[in-house]
Length: 288
Ligand code: HEC
Ligand code: HEC
Image (cartoon, rainbow, N blue to C red; front, side, top):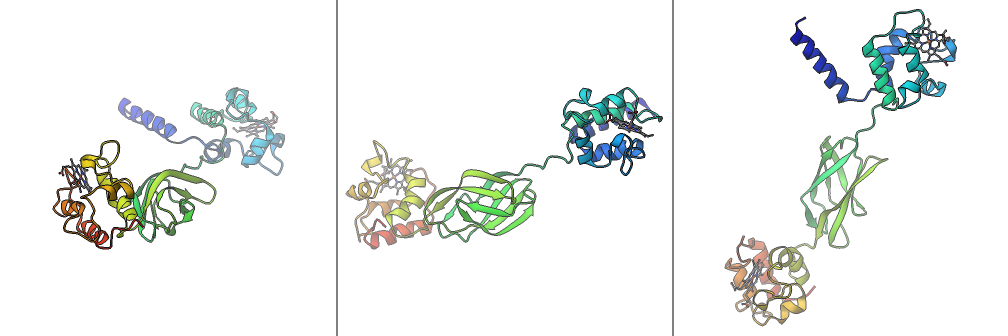
């Protein structure tokens, strides 16, 4: 073998070692099976030590998890006392046992942790029934999804990074946490989903769907633009020109949004939103 090939092997070993923590299964198949189980398995295990069963290995006390140098099993291997009467194990195999004990002598790899990163869309109607997509890591075992305290229906695991479900309905509008569960572990993403009132001809709905996201950064606070404060029903109606009940033609709020002059700096409101502002004024501009 050329030096280059040796180097490649070394790198591959290094990467292989770093990629996953050693487990009992690795140690059993690569060391105990080959060198030890002839004498150390029940019935009649030498020194009463059965290395073929994880719980027996741990119960025997020959391993001090995380402390290889204090583990009798490691000491015996290092001094070449075991395997009794046979060739010593290789340096690489000794290293494997050492790494395993240092890692706490685990039985199986630690379960990969579920992670929830994004919920799309970020908002939806309080009536629910829309499909939402959850993205994250290790989602394969997700069984339940909760929006606030309500359970999502039609939970489908698309792959380990994606789950879809149908948003449940919610009594109140507002932000809720989204929680996923695999039956034993829960993972929660706070304020992940915004329940909004459906677009309707009431001040409350228009505030939630249009005024707050698209107008209030200019039309609220200490000095609202042109004295128009859209943040409360009272303030909105107190402005003399903005909303004139049953009078679409003279209501500036309709005029400005239908012409595309507001929101200033754009983008234009979609047609259904302008139409709903019109319906609201024609209905006498009710609060709820
Ligand atoms: C040929 C049979 C034989 C083989 C193979 C063998 N052992 Fe042993 N082992 C013994 C006997 C016999 C004893 C008890 C007497 C002694 O300590 O020498 C013992 C004792 C031990 C002890 C001490 C147990 C205690 O409670 O003090 C450990 C640890 C151990 N063996 C580990 C191993 C490991 C690990 C291997 C494989 C790498 C191995 N043995 C291979 C026969 C064997
Ligand atoms: C970037 C800041 C900004 C945003 C966002 C904005 N406006 Fe305005 N608005 C203004 C300014 C500045 C004026 C005054 C100049 C004008 O009338 O063009 C104004 C004027 C108005 C007027 C006229 C008031 C009057 O006294 O005649 C209405 C009605 C209005 N805006 C409604 C809205 C609505 C509804 C939205 C959201 C859909 C909105 N604006 C978004 C800055 C903004």
